[in-house]
Image 1 (cartoon, rainbow, N blue to C red):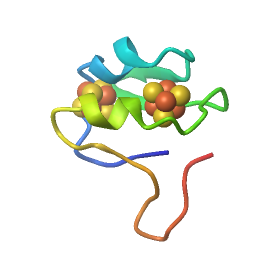
Image 2 (image 1 turned 135 degrees about the vertical axis):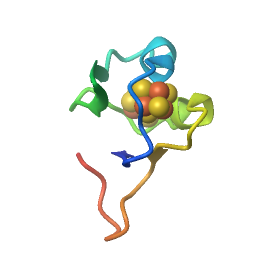
Image 3 (image 1 turned 180 degrees about the vertical axis):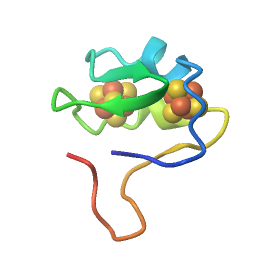
Image 4 (image 1 turned 90 degrees about the horizontal axis):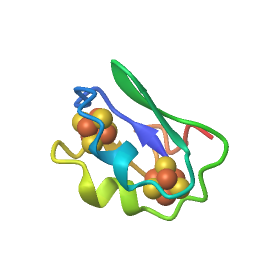
Length: 60
Ligand code: SF4
Ligand code: SF4
């Protein structure tokens, strides 16, 4: 999963991740507990979470 520059650190994704895989320090960061379930990206109001970045790579 990849967090793009739209992220404002609102924490909504953090609240919905049931793996404890999102940390928010100013901006969301996804750690290696992530299972790529995709729930977080459906809750981000700014579409800041994507499966892959523009280079086709996830952060983890
Ligand atoms: S919900 Fe979106 S904007 Fe809010 S912290 Fe998560 S990635 Fe960032
Ligand atoms: S894809 Fe699923 S496990 Fe990974 S950070 Fe998002 S909600 Fe959590």
